[in-house]
Length: 564
Image (cartoon, rainbow, N blue to C red; front, side):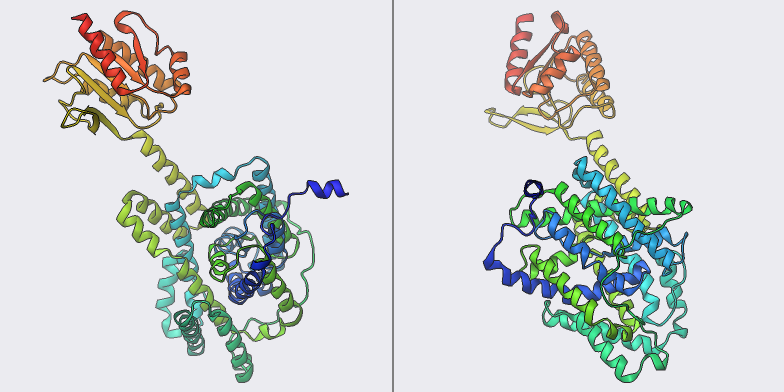
């Protein structure tokens, strides 16, 4: 037994123990509970599950990640992105809010746990890198628009109508004449409290104050008796451990939902954990975090709640409050336990408009306007990716948005390698060194010699552009080109198609009387070139391989001089 315990990975998020930090971690955990409890209750409005399931996400799942995850900072609990995926993918096979629907959300969490476990075993943490930062900005902003648009009618006491964010917003404004003034007053009051607390002190739990105050006013003024919608009975006590039952016809929706959540969890959790590890110069262990996330979702699926995810907003709450380990998260879980055991009865009086308002503000906060502005000023093409992802998520749903984001990110990467930077080497003004300039006619490295630089791996997609540009610059009508240096120091790999194109280029230039020299110092590239026969040949058909551009130019100059 002792040997088995010794083999288990130690809880890296808790150890090594830092006694001087414990007080700050406990205070940060109390702050997290105060701010996150209303938030996770609000997420149940998005996922269309009972209010208590939001509290459950901050109990066993949070403890599971604290014990098995590697990050000392990442907070794992309910998240708006995955909550939105659930209702979008499962509403067609079970009525949202019903017991069968709740079982499906639990099943999704269990399948996500399996996916994350497989990803950890196969060490697939790197897959998070395939969703670019710009795509992630668009994805989360689109979810924010979708969430805010869905809750906008609730602020006016109206039901949600229409598919897609635009239709829901237009529908809400078209029915303003039917709005209920009591719901609107509650919503305005909640916004005033939350915004006011944020301006006074960002650490003030504005959402918690708004929730507690609205419950008190609801009880004093008898909101339920006056027809104002309230949350209703919230079951107390610990969650029951149960395995959900899924019919065969429902598995397709469960798998689609789980796959969508898996992609978001992989990208968002890894990016958040990595960012905070870099901030504190700690080692980021993505695959260990996948184990913790798998355990957290397993705990969620068995304890009656829905998918959990690494939350950037909650992680920032803990960090801003001084928390530096998972002890803060265990403290928050302990507070949730007390709420479940002793304080669920007052939650029945919570006005539904309060939750709608809190979720609406969460959605607005998710819209990364600062990130979008930065992309607009610094990288227009990535701004297009972000906006396209945002619009797709807001109108068509999260899964199409994720698919588009991944595809556009990969296309953008291929575009960079398909049209890489190219340049020509030429002596600087005083002739003491070489410098690169854009490709243009008349730029020589030495009399009769061109030196061309290609800054990307050479593969089937860009090989044709490579050869065409070289043929064009070596066929200049106003210059006699007798030698060509190809600076391949920026090329780390070459595939079969590109190698064949390079061999054909060598033969074509040889027939035109142009000698070739290649520059590379990479052992792997040298092996590749020799394997494809690039370093071989006879007479004018041979290709010299050199370590530097200067060496190649001198060798070609001497060779050409000897031939005259």
